[in-house]
Amino acid sequence: MVAGIKRAATITAALNRLTFNDADEVRALLSELIGRPLDSSFMLIPPFYTTGGDEIYIGRNVFINQNCTFYDLGGIHIADDVMIGPNVSIITSGHPLEPSQRRSVTIGKRIVIERNVWIAAGATIIGGVTVGENSVVAAGSVVTKDVPPNSLVGGNPARVIRRVDGSVPE
Image (cartoon, one colour):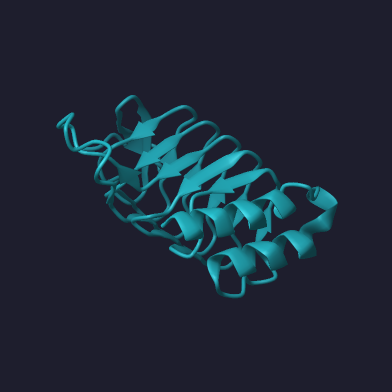
């Protein structure tokens, strides 16, 4: 794990020296970080932070705004057409509640962000969560449970506010 963190820190340090105008270089470095080529439609505005990178999958036409943090130990799957606002944290890892175990174990739980999701500025997504297709996570929200498709969620912890078509959930 330590070797992976060092590798990611080296690549992200190089990536974070780039600007919005260096889109091809950003894409190349992030492709190296995650271990697979990114589609030419992908865009990320640095800075960007991650613990490993090799457990991240990113689909086509994905936009990641500046200052995002992805802790990917448990795996992060981002489908096509996703937009991620600035200062978003996607955190798959955590520690046991039991004080004697906290420093000895890191627990990873996968996060899935389905197609056409918008995660607004400053939101946090916690491990084990799936954000359903076409959903919106409101700015500053903390998502601790699955988000149904076509939903707007907000708050801490996030809860369904309404459907994206304007109707109220049952």
